[in-house]
Amino acid sequence: MAYIYETHLHTSEASACGKTPGKDYISFMKQRGYAGMIVTDHFFNGNSCIPPFLPWKKRIDLYTKGYENAKKAAEGMNFTVLFGVEFNFDGDEYLIYGITPEWLKEHKEIMKMNRKEVHDLIHSASGIMVHAHPYRERDYLHTIFLTPEIADAVEIYNAGNEPYMNALALEYGKKLNVPFTAGSDVHIISKRHMGAVSFENRIETINQFVEELMSGHGTPVIVKNESIEKVTDLPEMHDVSKKPVLPVVYESR
Image 1 (cartoon, rainbow, N blue to C red):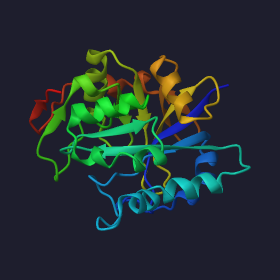
Image 2 (cartoon, one colour; image 1 turned 180 degrees about the vertical axis):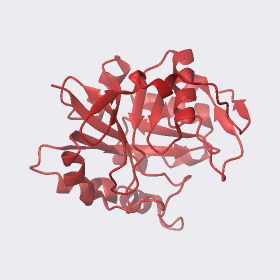
Image 3 (tube, rainbow, N blue to C red; image 1 turned 45 degrees about the horizontal axis):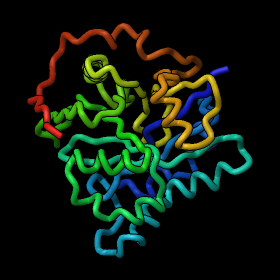
């Protein structure tokens, strides 16, 4: 039996673009066949709705409300809710797994760090950084920044992206020879196709998720109405004939 997990999800409590409260996702995700989800709200350097003038620890408490509310709503429902972060640099965003809200409270300096420094800090906490939607193109972005040295894994399928963007992400992940993830980048409950990572065993903690993913035990999948397919089996994931419109810049560490 396979267990599937949402790896990229936003709540209205912490993400300015989020439309659904954390607690409202649980029944919906279970109905779609998910065994759990990772809440990855935009951090303070991204599309956050947390007031910037509050004390740091208070901001973290507010930032984690969506996660906490979802976790409480899932009690007794055989559904796992885990904590993650979506961290922005210059339009290039990384999903951070393996840290805790308590850890964030003690590391205010993360806001002033460059890519390498953040990566080193996350690794010191046994966490990882997954490059989210690396070839995403939007009208508010000016450049595609790629930093291979800090990509512990690559999100090759993002349900909010066009097929050519996901195909380019898969090609990038193959070049780096790192694990792959898939996620819905969900902001509101809908019936669209979704992404997930499938595991043979149930995932109970974020550290277990990190370990299983980095050991190569996770399979990126797309969740349709009544079916689950491996992302790499989709023909459109291998068509890289369409190239990015935005300039692609490789950043050094």
